[in-house]
Length: 441
Image 1 (cartoon, rainbow, N blue to C red):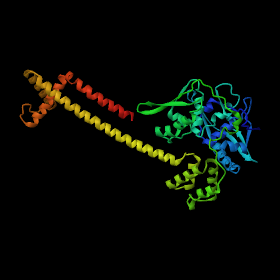
Image 2 (cartoon, one colour):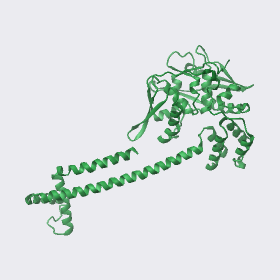
Image 3 (spheres, rainbow, N blue to C red):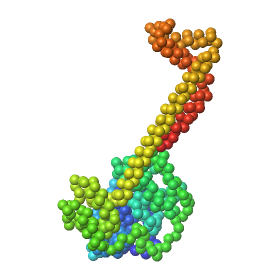
Image 4 (cartoon, one colour):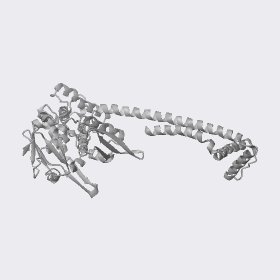
């Protein structure tokens, strides 16, 4: 059995099929997964049993209180034992689903792990179709999506760009169907966070959302540091490579009592206290408080299950998300008001254009010789008869006179269309510009 040693200049080698695969892990699970893969030697011929001591687990999960590592490790191990990796090659019409681990056992302060032997072709004796990482490359990341996007982009470092189908990328990132449906949410809670966290890495990127028709269907990542190699890292500090930047302090009984008081009395049990303590140690008091306040506001039927889901899935700072959703709502309202204003401008321009056209038609008609005027009127009457053969075109009725005038002016517009081109061009250009602005909103 091989024990993890973070003091080494650790190199992590991943088969590209694993990088491209679909799997859904939370941040702690990804960190442990990466740490375990780093234990595999390049000349290993079979997957062995690997082990990580509690001290190293503290560093991976960023826990300073050693008493909390037992429950945290149990939770993370429970999640990883359920995880499935989905590998697909659509060109070859091939797919496969594998459990990643066959065993996780914690005893005497050591986590013992065995990978599923079925995935050994993707982890052992990699000679081609692989990508190298150093453990320290993952140090800055606090979002699981940042880690996965970093992995997916590193293969394309020398190419300098990579385009994904948005729905396919969501699956690769472990985002279930139905989650983050709106593009604005996908950008805000996934892509923009990854962009910030990768900004000071060799894989800093800009991105473009690509439309197909009226819908955004693809996303293109453009690497800013094309062809640049990963800078050397001080591996004397490698023991903390997987730590989040902010270290959580020792447990505070006062903080815990304050958090316990937020739980409805009828929902407080020993297991709930244990869950709260566990997340207090791994995420800090503010995260736990915000999660509980969020759940309390939702008034779910199954309080404990809802609280567990909220804590476990790292919904981020729920209060911050609610503020962002409120900002989004306001932005949408401002957008609707702007569109209504612009449409009002279009209607006003159409009205002005029609008035100008009618005025021009009258001017053109009045400038015609009398015999030409009579011909125009006859054509107008013919159009009326074509539409309604029973119409009395010689009527002196006021209503008919108004109708004949309208048809006469329409005939002028048709016969002398060149006289109206400048008016149409002037107004239609303004209208088209406003319509483009509406489309861009």
